[in-house]
Image 1 (cartoon, rainbow, N blue to C red):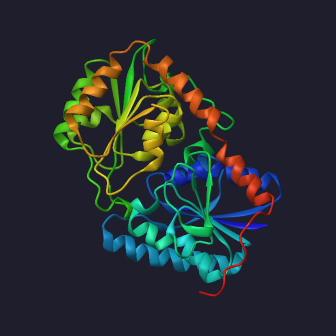
Image 2 (image 1 turned 180 degrees about the horizontal axis):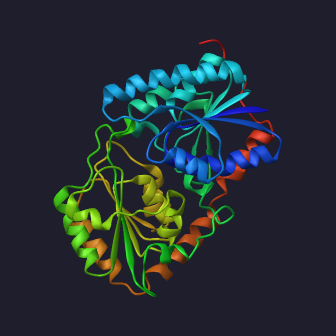
Image 3 (image 1 turned 120 degrees about the horizontal axis):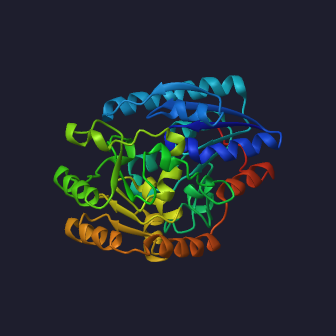
Length: 352
């Protein structure tokens, strides 16, 4: 088959990389269209993925809508030449273009209705929507659930082995503890209504952790001058090895919180959110791998962090929790490869 895959951000590169390579190994032809956002193109090159970057992400709502229309048009035009049998995406433009091309569109989506406008732009036009089975929503006959998280398409043990040499790249001494923080720009379409950590809380967090080990900050945007010394400058393909060996993750990125959790690293998620991120809820309530502070309880959050990093058996305890979670979940990349290769696909879309 000919499959058109849309990559709209850096996380999508991780999600699709093993799926793309697996499909190509089975003889399918894959065409990638991408969007330049926070090292997306660099990461694709690192993974040996060839694609065409058709737009560049620019924050602010007006820019996002303008760019969406351009992406819709460019993907449709590319699709007219490529003539795909299937469009696979995690974003809105691929859904719209696939609808115009009158080919089936499958979407992987773990945010659901809490993504607001983004969900509205995707759900009605997608041919089939796949979500983790913890997603407590129903989109009708087009909705299929699987026992996993999107992160297990690239962080399942079948697909990922941490590299301990990352500690040398970070300049760490033998046995030195370190913590990873993530500060997002909250400028994406699905970030409407969200509020991240205050500057005051971030300052307290950095000070508290820096007194107990090394602090590294992954940031989508600029950092205040006094925090620049903490910036994580790793090659983007190395971030998951760094997360695996970290003592703790804290930040306002739900994806990175989930990545840390499925790697067995205690994770703190701190963000006001208009809805429920069901995968984070399950990782907290069912497996105890994550602390979810969607309602922005600063003092409770700080108390949880201090308590965690005081525990000398912390990583061992989390590894046991991780093994229990993995016993319940699947290799999501293999799930999609088998699904598409086996031809279990929706029928052609009718004309929009």
